[in-house]
Amino acid sequence: MNNLILHSKDLNIYHISLFAFASTVVYLTGLAIYRLYFHPLAKFPDPRLAALTQWVETYYELFNKEGGQFYFAYTDWHKKYGNEFLPNELHIQDSTFYNTLYSITKHYVKVAHTQYRFGLPLSSFATSNYNHHRLRRGAINPFFSRRKIMEHSHAVQKKVDRMCERLQNDSMGVSRVLGLNEMWGCLTSDFSSLATLAQILPDSLVRWLSPQMFSVHKFNNDMIDQVQQIIDSRARDGKSDGKNTVFKALLDSDLPPEELSLHRIQNEAVSLVGAGLDTTAKTLSTTCFYLLSNPSVLQKLQEELDHSMPDPADMVSYDELAKLPYLSAVIEEGLRLAYGVVERLPRIISGSPLPYGDWVLPTGFPVSMDDHDVLTDNAIFPDPGEFRPERWLGDAVAPDGKKLSTYQVSFSKGPRACVGLQLVYAEVTMGTASIFRRFDLTLHDTDRASVEYYMNLVVPRPKPGVHGVEVFLQSLRA
Ligand code: HEM
Ligand SMILES: *[C@@H]1O[C@H](CO)[C@@H](O)[C@H](O)[C@H]1NC(C)=O
Image (cartoon, rainbow, N blue to C red):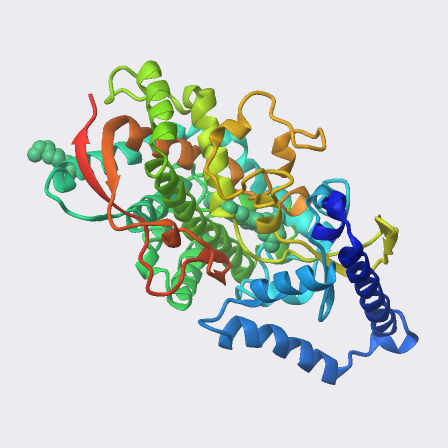
């Protein structure tokens, strides 16, 4: 569809016959899907088919090359056939449709079986039912609002300052290679202590947040103990212990009692912590990589930073940083080329059937898109592989006249969009500004392969054996 519709100026006989072929495939597959889903017997899952579908995806995710390859397989199928019927869903590559499928006004839900993917079925993240999700999500939203994050941003800056001081003490001018993925990993896990500082998670939980310790099972068990203590103290004293954490708020909220079980709270906590670690560190490292490999971009950024902060020790507030136009554009471009999460994000059409081009997507039917397809769409972001913050400047619009930010889909859109978005902007903005205001860095033995999407581990990963972004810390900037 991508090729056939978006670039219709390229239509020629080859495309037309391809389209005819694709239409036939689509028709036949549509028929199959009709039978599968809407035939009276379709209610009864066909185990053979389910097994088959499982295995197509499983094969590519586990056994093809180094694994994590299913995305590349169906991207090839798209090129051949247009819209792609994956075993149990329709997958669409058409950026202009993204905001329709992931619209805030639609009540489309996630596919229920994916709730077991991360072993946290009781988290907001995994909840499928629309109203149930709203209830759970509503309870955590206030902790991640822009205002709330702004209020606590000085704490983030303090962490960044400490990191910079450590770098200055330990790594400068000693030709020591610095792994940025690890460095930002430490910071973002520490940042999850922003969680603490923003009074989101109790201190005791945050101790477990370093990536090395992020062994899910151990983490889960420890978390259960911690949450149990909070619940116990609440039962004992009539109030929950300690600071105004998200748990306390959850426990003291109007949520019905069944929402306040130990496992429910623990699932929510682990998902909140887990969702932000790798994703944010990857975004920071990727942004650094592209800045260091585009000297003219870096120079512009540093001019802006120097101008607003003559003294590198004295960073302006996050509020001020967020108003710097070039820095903001750099952050958007870094988010774009970090590719967000690389999952298909299926949504089940509900309410009334959804028109799409010449088709009508029936209700009860899972439809998915990939953030990566939109973020790298040449029709929206020309020369998508180029790191070009300029594309975001001013009132940037996409070729279809919509605001370019419409296509900033790194956090997805709609009711299931990322709850941590404001936190991420704060971390990435302060981290990037501080490092590049204060230090001259050079890349060490790092090229694009270190940040490219080679395999899907929810976060896009480079080829195994390719190391992360590495730098030398050359000197302090005045
Ligand atoms: C650069 C960093 C991040 C990126 C690119 C990112 C991206 C995303 C995306 C694409 C989704 C939608 C997933 C889906 O539909 O299945 C999502 C959901 C979510 N994210 Fe993030 N995320 C980031 C950081 C964070 C952080 C720091 C937190 C923690 C506060 C967080 C918490 C969540 C939660 C709880 C959801 C589920 C929302 C729901 O279903 O209602 N994320 N994120
Ligand atoms: C950096 O070095 C100074 C002077 O030796 C010391 O006072 C400071 O605590 C060190 N900072 C860190 C974060 O290691």
